[in-house]
Amino acid sequence: MKTNALRTAELFFKLLATKLIIARHQIMGKLLNVSIWSFCTLVIFGYVMPAMGVPAAFGLVQFAGVLGSAGMFENYGNIAGIIMDIAGERSIGYYLTLPTRPWVVLLSTACSFALVGMFLTLAMVLLGKVVLFSTLSLASIAWGKLLTIVALGNLFYGMLAIAIAGHVGEVSKIGNVWSRFIFPMWFFGGFQFTWYAMHKASAPCAYAILANPILYIMEGLKIAVLGQEGHLPWLVCLGALTALTIGCWLLAYNRMKKRLDFV
Image (cartoon, rainbow, N blue to C red; front, side, top):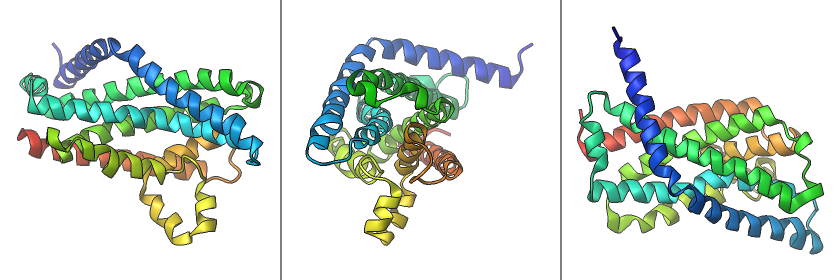
């Protein structure tokens, strides 16, 4: 006889599999989209900017930034999809009628977003090697750290998508998602700079952006690609990102509870 925990786990994985089957029909288009942006970024910062005097190693900084951005940019479509579903077909309403807790439905959604984001992120490692070629040594990457941050970072992105969708709510406000949430978090999240560089430029701003979860994803990926020197301590990145991911999950759950009025 199955226990409640076993039934919950079974339904969670069935929901996750269902969402991944649905997502696979769009995966090549998503991969093409992120590849175009990543290719342009790596070419400019790997070859053009060094010709203008920027250190050649900056291409690797941007490579780490590309890895941290793939899942973040994917979130725009995820957020829009949730908002339009709530306003239209309300398939999420059907899932919530299944004999399980609402958190199982929401967590399976976040995890499906995370797995797609992880695939896109890891695909950009191969693209980075092709574009940067000898500048990027795959042997020098700390793979354990990279995979840890890629997994945890994309899980955070998945939960962030639900939290933002629950906050925005209306189709007419989808345009606010990029300008009010994704772009500010990304631009001040260390895509083009390190925390210590920001601290040197403005200590108040540096301490303020410590509240930005994207910073720990970017710093963690730079540690994995470039090494620890010049970046926030690895354990600080890992601990802060874990805590902020849990906080984001609680926020996402509460926002969607108010939006969908489930018990």
